[in-house]
Image (cartoon, rainbow, N blue to C red; front, side, top):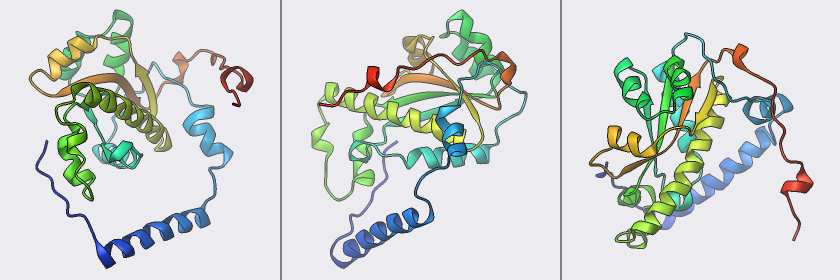
Length: 226
């Protein structure tokens, strides 16, 4: 997964790029200052985790748009460690089913697509492309614990971006943790530097499987001023 390279801009080119980036943010704020209530309801406030699905495939073009939005989310040092594996064929679903707890098998099998959200422990090898203005590879090379923590944290962030982006594009999601990471890794990532994090079914939901939304902690219980 290595081999990409990127030349860091300098001098007048760098100054121009900084100016363009700053103006782009000003322009964005000029177009929209916040999402309206309907947008917030769609992506988080009234969004639900789904367990049943319509028999309606997700087009590849939509998956590409979904990844593009997801990849725009920030990660530390732009490490981008997440890797997304779309499980759609009957063969791939059967392989994934080996890792699932029994109650989750039907949820996955009936979903148009399930993504394994994984992370690459050797993400740092891509830093010459992702972070070209300074060589940060020595921060990670030969430091497996630091690599693992960084990859897991930022890969989890990217998984959350994926779910929000999917909802923003009109898809529904149902994240799952009821499975064996060890079995997934043995089945799909043996001999690689990839590790699974969590699974997410997605597509167009059948809302008839929903129950009432569970409570969340109130502000005063979950938040403190220090």
